[in-house]
Image (cartoon, rainbow over all chains, first blue to last red; front, side, top):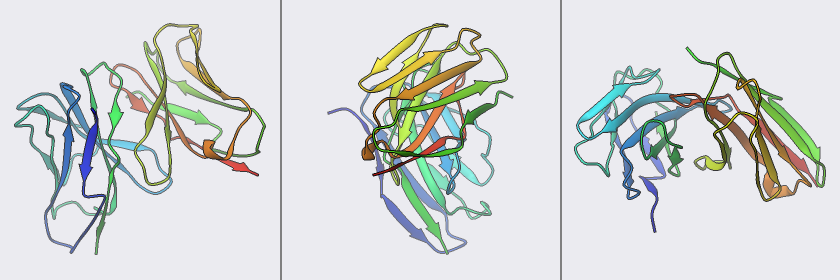
Length: 112
Length: 107
């Protein structure tokens, strides 16, 4: 059945290492998004993509990078330049930029 | 940019009570969405509203698109323990998310 998958659920990394979070959707959605959520906080937009091979910075893009080589996939790389990378990362997709967003289960990243 | 405020920030209620929460915007929205997030999970879409004044129900949940188009309301009737979580509103052309209302249900 259709949905959004994120893997892994939990990820641990040492400070200074880049790490890539996976997001795949089989909903045939054009738009995909990455959000960051800190404890007790709302969602902050990192990057979004409206179409393959195109993506735009959100509110907190510094220290992150993305790619959109396939419609189904929108991986997020947390680089060593991100000063405080420990957080809960959520991927979402929508039929287009104006459509309702559907979320994956999230990846909790811990950097020590 | 667009900002959303949600009220209350958190609430503790007894099982069986009704719940009301709202979301306000500094600008006019054409769409309002309500999500629920369980601890450690991704938000799940509950209700989508597309027209000013629209009232839509999903089981025990009812949401309304405010007539001014700057607010929306979510009501939960006869709360149960599994209603616990964070309720987010989202709206606007680029779907800005509110900070959430954290609901706790006491048995």
